[in-house]
Amino acid sequence: MVISVKDLSIGYGDRVILEKVNFQVRRGEVFVILGESGCGKSTLMKTMIGLNPPQSGEVWIEGSNLVAAVGDERLRLLRKFGVMYQSGALFGSMTVLENVRLPLDEFTDLPKPLKELVSLSKLKLVGLGGAGSKMPSELSGGMQKRAAIARAMVMDPGILFLDEPSAGLDPITSAGLDLLISGLSHHFGITFVIVSHELASIYAIADRIIMVDCSAKGIIAEGKPAELRDRATDPWVHRFFNREADASHSVQPT
Amino acid sequence: MLRGRLSARSVVDCWNTLEQKLRGARVKTLEVDVSGVDFCGGAGFALLRYLNMGKMTPGAKVSIVGLATGFQTIFEGFTSKDYDAFHPLDQAKSHPLIEEAGHATRQLIGDVRDQVDFLGGVAANLPPSLFNPKRMRWPEVRHVFELAGANAVPIVSLVSLLLGFIIAFESAQRLAEFGAQIYVANTITVVMVREMGPLMTAILLAGRSASAFAAEIGTMKVNEELNALETLGLSPFRFLVVPRIVAGILVAPLLTCYSILMGVVGGALVMLGLGFSLELILHQMALSVRLGDLAVGMEKSLVFGVIVAGVGCWRGLQTEQGPSAVGLSTTRAVVTSLLLIIVADACFSTISYFLKA
Image 1 (cartoon, rainbow over the protein chains, first blue to last red):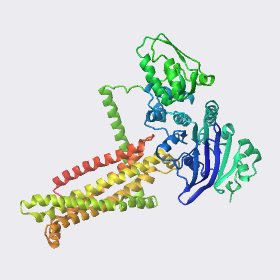
Image 2 (image 1 turned 180 degrees about the vertical axis):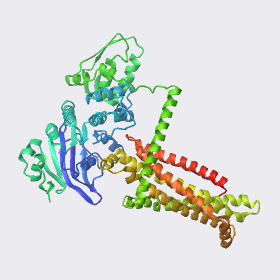
Image 3 (image 1 turned 135 degrees about the vertical axis):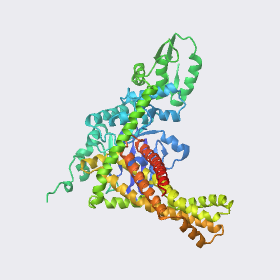
Image 4 (image 1 turned 120 degrees about the vertical axis):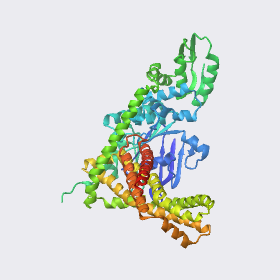
């Protein structure tokens, strides 16, 4: 198992969002964390990548506990994965190439021409071969997310965390991003942990899903997408996968 | 022949060795055998491509042989054509002086036009809001008044008190040479009422509130909240600018009065320390200031209040897109406010000199 989450409780202050969550991510799989808006998916991911300290529990990444890691050990663990944030989070004052090259500049002694070649090859891999000299503001939302993926994988991490990769994208761009994720997983054996609630995208890329729920404060379903869609016993999971609206949300003319 | 792992770390050593052996050497054919490579990361592929492009051995025919099938696919995913297609950022072209001057003039004219637009918007929206209480967003005015005024009291107290101290000590030294230390009270009162009270308050307001207005409105613009106001049929001027200007007009004179009081207290404390009685100090202070002096101070503070609030809102509305846009607007708001405050102050001093006010 490349990632093991053990008895993880997360929240803000005294408020508990998820309590004693346990799950594992296998090497090379596309693992999706699913749930309704505001149920703690992104907070769970932020805890898994060490941005958000948990209330209790452990996150093991390739055999080391990130929660307990400090100093150099924590830095070593952080380099095992890359992260793409929902907005892309490219640095606006740098060109796309400089954004992608930044981790190489900071953490390697590679000569400049090689750094440029590595960055350009990653950009080519995500379909942005000609965009290196552009500024992030000149890219569309989908292109910014692709560039962010290129930056996340420039150090050849084995794991990529993606926060809402399809959010705000048109179906064609979103499908292109799904293809990229599947391709990277298939050809490079990269493990993906993706936070999403875009059903079409999930069906296209996910190997395994966990579904978190605020009222249960934990995982209410786990399995393959088709299994959950067809055989979910939990009514909420069934409604989610079959896009059935909550009756209380309908307009009641008075 | 390359063997083992081609990771980011090992590639550095490999590069150094190759550089030593190949740079400067006359190589006609180079065959790189990588059949012994069991791991090849991004840096490894970059090294192979660099060698393959002949960058280390110009003019030589370079071939990479023995790549495992999986590696071959990745290696061919980025070719020398892809490398050539990338053109580094064009160096900033040097513009001739006349072109630079043209750009600057155009920018200046655009800025002036923006200012006129803004003043027009304020002129069109301020009077109707003032004369029709229903149009004025009084809760917003109260909120801004509290943020810009009440919350600024501690810093105004400290700065003004210390200012009174400084003026008193500095003037006491000089006046002592003429045996006229008692006139320290007159100096402090006149300086604080006519000049330093309004000016220091305005400077503090520019630092605290003009920047806050610019940042708040700028962020709203970046988040398209201003567009939302427009499409709801609400004028950003009436909704955002007018309440801030009204709050600025109300808060600046009040804070100035408070600043004058604290400055005078600071000066009085120094004079008490110098051995003068409180009665004498107050008598001197009352003698030195006329109602006209106070009126000048209040007029200044009113104008400074309008400048601070107006410039803050104007720069906020000017915010463009991009990550640094709000920061730029905030800086511009503070710099422009300070500049206009000093210009206005100079105008006041000149006018009051000629009017003998």
